Length: 369
Image (cartoon, rainbow, N blue to C red; front, side, top):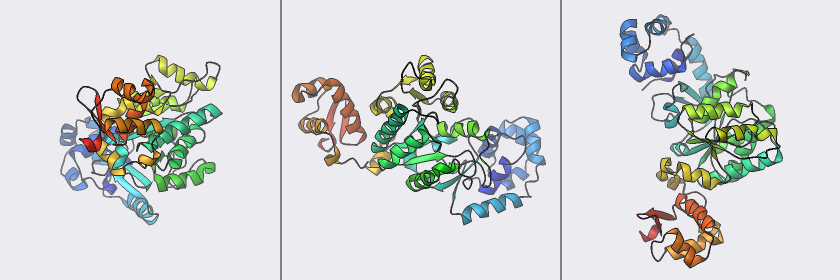
């Protein structure tokens, strides 16, 4: 398993990109193993070109004073470190083309965070956008889905707040070091994020939040999740960069429709034209990512959604499903609840572990199986 010092040193070699580091550590997991290889053999083993292999070999890997100082500082601050190639490194993020070799974190990333959805949008959000972001994120959090965003103002802020207010997990990805939190107006929010999930960065401490860092960090925001929801964004927006990176990473992309008179929704309209899935509810998202969700992680949290929190319609549906497996039409016949409402509630109940779908698109109460 690659060590933090090894990865931090590789990451600091000028001209060596994250994608190259991924190839190197995938085949050569330590200083000792790397030392034994010639540049030619390193190139062959890792499938990087000879010029890159020579750069890695020429780097003074024994001179790790800078990385040791940084590592000791991170430990003294109580931060966590996640190394590419290790078991606790986020699985989804490790699958992208250019994952960060090392992640620094205030708070912990857990196995539950595999079930994650990113919610992003403009910093200059309208009231509609803020309300939509908070509703979607809160609904996702209630279902045990971790909400990912960029800890910025506007839509990002509401996404994190929606998850926190629903007592769910949320992860914020910074464009600077953990000790250079930006914007300052969100400092308390970022502290809350670290307590309700994790505040993470690929940048070392004392790294200022430079403008060019934010497009770079967006690949992490999308890479950590099963899908990206763009709530509100103008035609030129960092949120669209995140959406396009998600497409390259083979993630689902969703867009919340807005007013045709609002320039703040022009980016969402553009994404929908280009194939993004329009969403008006949490259920639209869940229905799409359901095949990818790991229910064992959802059930380990057991949501906070117990029977006394269920809607009246949900309770009616559970009542009829206690007797026998039923499809949607038969549930409608017995409860007189609208078909669309039934479909929505079935999705929520299945995510909560209250019911289970069986052969023939029928549903049954879980404890009746």
